[in-house]
Image 1 (cartoon, rainbow, N blue to C red):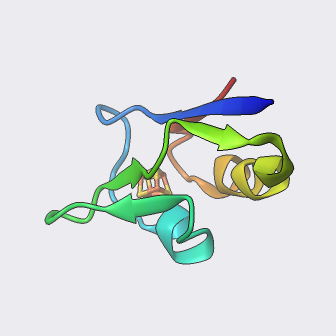
Image 2 (image 1 turned 135 degrees about the vertical axis):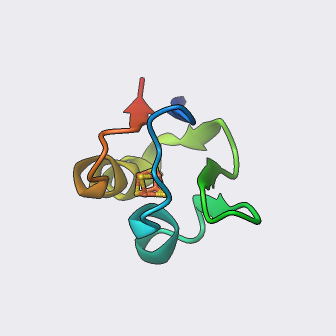
Length: 64
Ligand code: SF4
C-alpha cells in the first residue's frame, strides 16, 4: 500500500524544513523550493511524511 504526497508549489515558500528533516522523501530545486521525490510513498514512511506535513510553515504538503 502507498500513500500519495504532493507539495503545492503556489504555497511553498522554500523554507526547506521538509528536505532538511526528511531528505529521503523531499528534494529541492535551484531556487530552494521543495519537491516530492516520489508522489507515491510506501505506507511505512507515513510517520516521516506526517512529520514533514506538520513541520511545513506554509502547510504546503498534502498527504492523501
Ligand atoms: S517545508 Fe514547506 S514551505 Fe518549506 S520547502 Fe518544504 S514544502 Fe516548501
